[in-house]
Length: 168
Image (cartoon, rainbow, N blue to C red):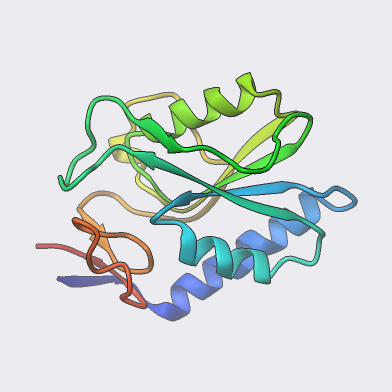
């Protein structure tokens, strides 16, 4: 494994994201929806840096399984507990890769009546995008490679690493 983003770089990116979200959502109370399992660390660190009032919930999406590349169709395996109708929703993802997972989730949230849906991604791997999905808030941009650490996993392992690494 090779270090890609150290903890200082990750924390600076999260600080910047929180600052932008605080500004954009001042006077509003967005609903943050973290995508499990990968975004649980990032979601917790992000919302603790917010000055605005917010709600937090999680969904579980599946697109990778035990593979290193996404399957052709993502699916929602655990829906939100909180109501999204008429809410300003911010989806929190640890990484946006092909966009297949977000495409399904955003469509589901809009269908459920969300007032608005924005995407906050710690890592954006734009070079692999296979959909028209774009993150509204991007912490870091990565060209390519399979990443692990800070919530990112390989077969449910290595999420606990405090930094982000590229697997060889």
